[in-house]
Length: 108
Image 1: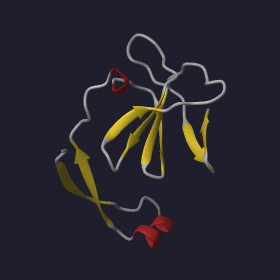
Image 2: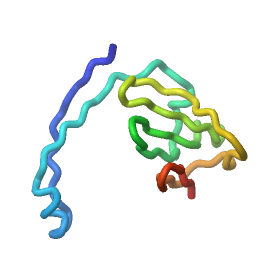
Image 3: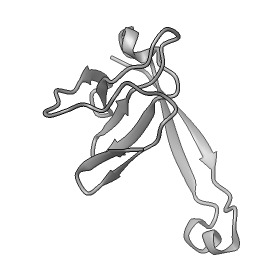
Image 4: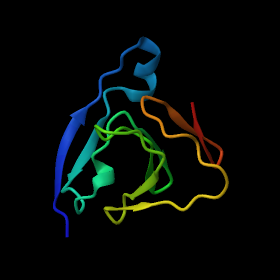
């Protein structure tokens, strides 16, 4: 089982309009022990988005080639897996962006 290492983060608003919503709220960030080593985790320039209880990671560069793999990191289980997809996968890429629109992951 993973050990949680909580730290406190004090968020200061960057702009005046942000101060109404944030008002120097404190958040707790939990650092998790790494999941079992996985070559797919050794990526850089990938995209990642949070959707429900998972962080979805697409593409990236491993030092040799670009990837077109979609991974899901389950926050509640501290586990990562390859996501099965249907249809035509986007080309291998790195240095891109992603966002969630409704229930769709959009890459650009």
